Length: 260
Length: 306
Image 1 (cartoon, rainbow over the protein chains, first blue to last red):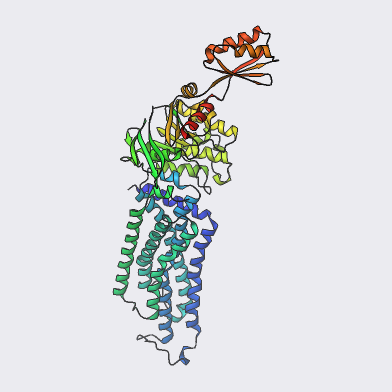
Image 2: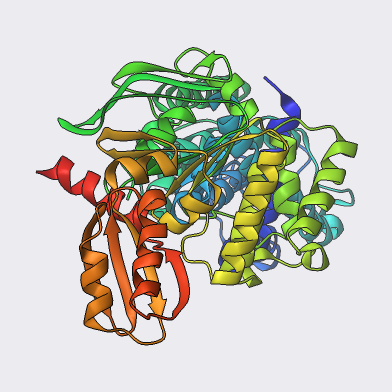
C-alpha cells in the first residue's frame, strides 16, 4: 500500500468538506454542544444545588470528600464518557459525502480509473473522515476541560481534568469509536446510491455506542477497568470487521454500472 | 498498442458489447463511432479496467485487462463523458490531486500542471475554483487531468460533446498535437466531422463491430461519394449532359448547385466539368460533399439494425 496516495485522498476529502457549508456546520455544531452545553447543564446544577437539604440522596461518598464533590466528579466523568459518542457523529456527516457525493457529482469514474487500489481508496476515504473526527474531539475536549476546571477549581482546589479516565477515553476509546463510525459510514457510502440514505444509515454506528453509554448511566454497567477493556476490544474488533466487510464487498463495477 | 479479441459484456442477460475484435497501432488516433447505447462507453470502461468483460480478451500496451489493471491504469489516461471535477477545488489542485495519485514526482508534476494549463489557455485561472468555470473550460481541465501523467494511451469519451465550436476546435487541435507526441488516442464520439478531421482509423460499433478501417476506406466502401458543382446559372442541357456520363449514378439540382452521385469521383469529376463547360456553364466551385462518412455511417448502422 502506498501511504502517500492514501493521504492524498484523505487530504482532498478534508479540503472538499471544508468547502461544503452544510457539512462544516454539522461538524462544528457537535463540539459546541459537547464542550460547553453538556458540562454546564450537568455540573453547574451540582455546584449550585442545596445538597445538604437533600438527606435522602443515595450517594456513596469516598473518604475525604463531601457529597457535592462526589456528585461533581460523577457528573464530570459522565461528561468525559460522552466523548466516546462525539467521534461517532462527525464521520457520519463527512463520510456520507464520500462515495455517494462523488458519484452524484460524477467525480468517481475518473478517480476509479487511477492506479489506486481498493484498499488505498477505502483507507484514504476513511482517513478523510477519521482525522477531522479526532481533531474535533480533541478540540472539544480541551474546551470541555477548560469549562469544567474553571467551574470546579474553587470546590476542589486542584484541576479536576484531565484525569486518568479522561485520558483513556480520549486516547483509546475516542479513536476506536471514530474508527468504527468511519468504517461503517464508508461501507454505507459505498453501498447506497443517494446522499439521504447514506446520511440516515450513517448514524446507525452510534446506536451500540449509545447503548453502552446508557447502560453505564443507568448503573447496569459498572465503570471499572475490566468493563472498559472489554469495551475497547469490542470496538476494535467491530471496526476491523466492518472494514474487512467494506473491502470484501467493494466493487468498482457496481458503483459505476448499478448506481444511477 | 491496443488489441481486442472477442470482447463481450452482458448486463443481466442483455448484451451491451458483442464479440468485438480490433487492433489499434501505436501513435494512431482511433475513433469508435456508434449510436446511443451501442456499447461505446462499456467498451472504454472495459479497456480502462473499470468493468470486467463477460468474455474475450484485451491487451493495452502489452498488459492484459484482467491480469494487470493497475499497470494499465498507470499507462492510460481516461476522460469520461462528464468532466467530474471537484468544483470546490482550484484548477491547479484538481490536477495536482490526480498527478499525486499517479505517483508523479513533484518537479514533473509542477511542470506538467503549468504546461497543460498554459496549452489550454487556463493558466491565468489556475487558482480559481473550477466550479466557477464554463463548461468548455471544465472540459479542458478534465482533458488536462487525463493527460497529467503523460499516458501512452488516452481514452476520450465524447471529448467535445456540449462544447461551443471554438472550444471544440481547441480540444481537437490538442488531440492532434498529442498524436505528434506519438500517443495512442482512443476516441469515442458521435461527431463525424471530428472523426474525419482527426482519426487515422475508425470502427463503427452497434453492439457488434460493423466496420473497421480508415475514414476514407469506409467512406469509399459504404458511403456515396458526391460532387457538388456550384454554377452561376443552371439549365437543363447541362444537367442532361452530366446525367449521360458513364460513372454518374444520380444528379440532384439544388438552386444553382448540381449534386452528382458518382461511382468513382476521381474519374467522373473531370468529365462532369468538361460536360458543363461544353454546354456553356460557368463553374464557380467544385467540391466533394462533406456527407460521405455520414452516409457510410448511417448505412452501416441501419444495415446492422435490419
